[in-house]
Length: 224
Image (cartoon, rainbow, N blue to C red; front, side, top):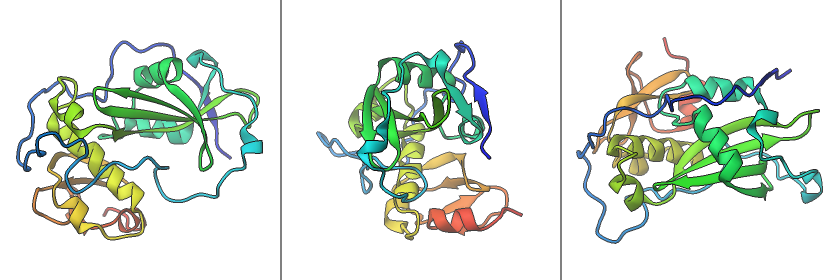
């Protein structure tokens, strides 16, 4: 059974954002005027694979926009601690308060908010007595805006896009999508902390040194 905790009060800092603003420029620059990332356009979708489509009749009541009313799942709280997620309590609060609210046949209710080229997505549920933050993620909404912003170092944008490509193609090997990504700081996927180098068609775990080309293989193999 999934346990729920209360949504904490407003936090003062966004702990997932790196303090460095140095852009990692090891990958080729995006062509002028292009609005999608090279080799891997962001595709909105549920992180982690396909799930049954939900009937619109299940949508129930419209979720409230007061973050203090929400409980949180273990799954969501675990994501807050994982490097490379870029989901934090302040951004979740802001997304619930100010973001667009839409019904999705895969997840149910979603809040979404774009900040400087990056979209924050928060999935909420209302199957319990109080609304619940189920999960959340980030995705590149506009490659040019994100890479040119002061908020997002190039390495962070690369990491967000790498995670999106792995999640949206969970069961496929995707060397062509991994190859452009330069991600020097480890991001957590499954049991592994992985990095990638531009030109290599795989991600590599910094702990067990295993190489992977799909999220399915990352999630099916434990890190020694």
